[in-house]
Amino acid sequence: NASGGVHHKKINFIYYDDKYEPEITWSNTQRLIDRDKVFALFEFVGTPTVKKILPLIEERDIPFIAPYTGASFLRNQKFKNIVNFRSSYQEEIDALVGYLVEHKKFSKFSIFYQNDDYGKEGYIALLKALKKRGLPLLSEGTYKRNTLFIKQAIYDIKAKKPEAIILVGAYKPTARFIRKAREDRNFKDVIFCPISFVNANALMQELHNNGVHLLFSQTVPTYTNHTPQDKEYLQLLKKYYPKHSPSFASFESFLAAKVLVKALSEIKGDINAKTFLTNIKHLDTHTLGEIKIHYKNSQLLNNVYLLKFDN
Image 1 (cartoon, rainbow, N blue to C red):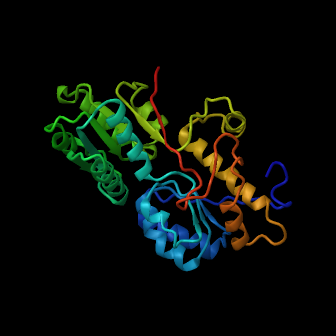
Image 2: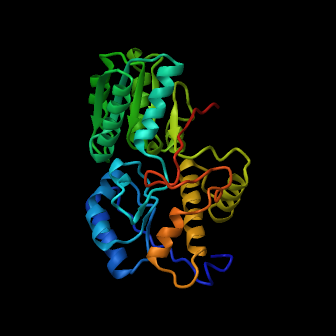
């Protein structure tokens, strides 16, 4: 917009807070479509929230771009109006399990997950990843969405003495789980494995930057590689949001926004949903430079990155 917009038209970015509650997501989405008359829906957050509005998205046939979830139901080829940006939870969890089995020779896995559609997606993904390698799931613990009640989960998981725990939750309850587990000698040397939705940067802040025995999966590479995309992201974040620290979540959203704008800018003639969807699915592989995009499995990114935080 600062550069004049797309074909001399400014993008109006309208957003409402659904408090991570599906019922509010439904009313917000109806408001966006019917009252605000939006061209597309972009970067909706969460699996249970998006699942709630899926019938509405399908019925209205509105472009639904880059939801911040790796849910399997969004990667159904029948949804021509849905374009995911990130890799799936299945790919993330498979990468974590594959690394720990192949490189660390682990065989004992447990899971801590949010007791809703998001957590169940992670649970099923882990079962599949373990089955592929002939391994059982040792134990599981859950908590209720938008709460911090993790005491029972600690109890349910620790008896089986896992070597690794896959974490499929929000960052605050996940941080609380890790802190409490670290106080328990039964979890000594256990590797905690949060997936991308947990929000690595926020989780590390909650843990006072103690990254011991943490292995994260991410759907985008780190923003510290000094690539043109990294530099642009850090520069614009500092310019427009000087009080905000860089994070994987905002870096991913920045990249998704670049893709969206590129697809709009390449439309010749009238800007309409059909042309926009065609463009975004057929963008040049090098649109994001070294971060290759390729529309496959209903998503533009198809890589998983594993990382840890030191100091």
